[in-house]
Structure formats: structure tokens, C-alpha cells
Amino acid sequence: MRIVQLVPSLEAGELAQETLEFAQELARQGQDSVVISSGGTLVSRLTLHNCRHFELPVNQAKLLNARLHRKLRKLLETLQADILLCRGPVCAWHGARILKQLGLHQRPRLVTSIDQWPSFGLLRGRRVNPALAQGELVLAASDTLGKQLSQRYVASFGAAQDTASTRNGTGEKLRTLYRGVNTRELDKNAPVSGHWHHRLLNDFPQLEERNWLLLPGPIGPGRGQERFLEVLAALKQERPDIFGLVVGDAEPGQEKFARTLEQRAESMGLAEYVLFLGARRDMRELYASARITFDLAGDRPRFAPSSGRFVAESLAMGCPAIAVAGTGVELLKRCFPQGLLLADDGDTARGAAGVEGLVAAAKEILERPRPVEFSGFSLAETTSRAVGWFEGLQAISSE
Image: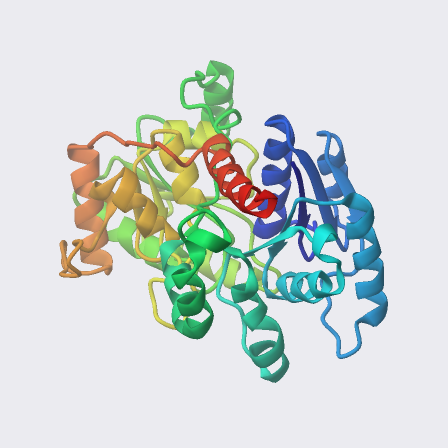
């Protein structure tokens, strides 16, 4: 089966990285994997793994797109794709427009996907974003995103759901497909090198005989670093053996915020309890050596929650996690309920997602950790699940 992904770009970023990993896993599972994008630094990595790439400016949606659509239509005719997976609203809009121009027997099955709630403007809200609901199969990166999309475009999904079993063979038009974790790279059964551990302690001797608490992610407002410092300050009063590791670089334009954050940590008496490590390439070892990974992005209304990537990676490595919002919370419900701050019925389980609740959750995990049940969320499993849904679409088209 030839699966073509349409993605805005393959520059660094979570959507580009997810596209790359999905394309590589498709090829590993024997599918013909193709990506069309505006290019980027990840193209070379893509083509090293039996995947093809074609460069077109599909990251743009202009009032006049005839030239781009003509090139895209000819490319799709040449590729004879079985599935066209359009990632994000702009690519979904291009894909839906192009398929109307293709003959019935040349037309791949249209799959759209949403990984974050799109921005709304006059052009995007009325013209571009509704294309997300036009796929024969719509993939949402979380249950929450799926619900938001179905509520926004209730007419599209209401009509589609009535005929879903006859249209796409999956039983549902809207499906949740979490981003899979590459467990070949994040292998919890692989030992951590003693040399790595020794080198890290040489660089940071204050880490020895301490319980490490991780906060990975870009540094910036709403990312949770300020709340993390508050948790460390409260937790060290009862657990002087803890140590916080903030992993990640400052977001572009947030260098001043990062410097202010380090100064604030020192003023809070955390000089011996926290390190700002910057971006790291040894996340597998850090997850394996940490006691808890925190995801505190989006804990306040005006900030968006995270994609849950760090929670998923941590759980894949068997490291407990705590999350306050977003996809990470959905993953914890399925894999590690002890890391949740809210009960399933919506009542507060530990006070709130404030400092007291976070401290209580961390203490409980440090003292009485429950096992992590990470199953069904590896990259191989999520890709196989998607391929099964695609085959359902193909089965209907061949009847």
C-alpha cells in the first residue's frame, strides 16, 4: 500500500518529527512510504530509511493556489497513492481540493489528522480549517482534540457517523491515534552505561545519592518551569534528597525569561536542588535514572497544554510521570493513574493541580510507586493500528 503524507514542512518541530517517525515505521513494516512537504532539515533523515520525499510549498494557503494544485495533482497522478494522509488544516485543505480534481479511479482515500487545535482567523476559520473534517477518516492526536473537532464541525461528523460503516469500513470516521514512542530507541530493558552515569556525576557531583525529578521541554511562559520550582521548594522541606533537572533550551525570544528563571531558583534557595541542563541527547538515560517526570505545561487557562510526548517517553522507559493537562493526562489514565491529580469523576483527588497537589502526588510516588503499564503506545503498535484502518478504507474502495 502506498501511503503519501502531506505535511507543511520537515523542519525541526514535533509535527515534523512525528511525520518522520511514522514514515520510517511505515517503510519498516513494508509499506510504500512517501512524504510531500516544503522541505526542511529532516528530509535527509527521511530518505535514508527507504522513504521518498517531494518538495512543494504545501505550507501555504493563498487566495490563488492554481499553480501549486496543478503540480500536486500531477504528482499524485504519477504516484498512484492509495492513501493521502494530510497533516494539519492547511494540508487538509490542499488535499481535499486536489482530490476533487482527480478522476474517481485515480483518487486516493483521504485521511486528515489534527495534532493541535488550529488558530482561527477569517480565512482559516471559514475556508481552511473545516477541511480537517472532510477526510473519510479523521485522526486526532488525543480524545480531547477529537471531541473539540466533532463539536466544532458537528454537521460533518454527525452525517458521516451515520454512514461510517459503509464509507470507511472502520466503524467510525473520527479516531484517536496517539503519537507512538519508538521503543527501539527508548528501550527500557537496555542497561544504562556505567560510563554515562560516571561522566554525569563528574560533571554534576551534586546529583549523587539524590532522587532526580525531570521537567523536559522548551523553556518559556506556560511551560511549567515556574510551577516546577515552586514544587521543588515545597518538596525539599520534607524530602531533602530530591533534585530537579530542567531539560531543554529556551524558546526563541525567551532567553531573558530563562535567565530570570535561573535567578528566581537561586532566590528561592534552590541552588543545591535544581540544574538547568539545556537540550540533551541522552534522554533515554535520564528517563531511566529519574524517579518522576513532570509535564506541567498548560496548567493555567491562557496557556496551551503539551502534546504529551514527554509523558509517553517517560512511561515507555518505566519512569512514573505526573501531568496536569493535555494528552499527558489521557496517557496517565491508561498507563499510570497514580500520576493523575484529578479523579475520573472530575473531583479533586489531591486538592488541585496546584503546588500542594503536585507535592502530594510526588511524595506518594517517591514513597510507594505503582508499576507503569505501558502497552499499545509504541510506534510499531500505533502505526500498525493506522495501517489497519487504512486497509479498511481500501477494502471498501475495492468492493
